[in-house]
Image 1 (cartoon, rainbow, N blue to C red):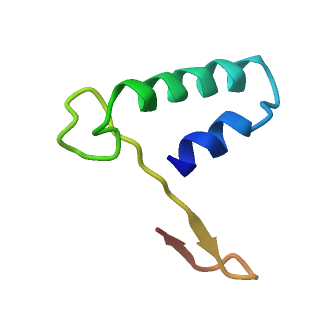
Image 2: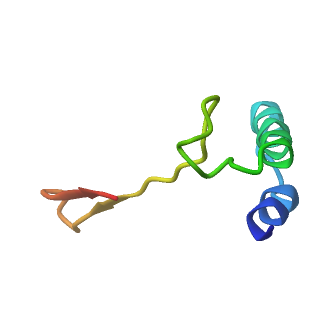
Length: 61
């Protein structure tokens, strides 16, 4: 799984990021449905904020 390899190769900024990274890798490795809402424990999501140049409009994706 590409995202697993991307997260595995990520160099954490601090100890908290390292703990989070290990938690996510463990979760992905043990939950084949990690990207589906059907997983009752948790599921992976992503978000992004798009802001125009003068910051008068925001789009959350």
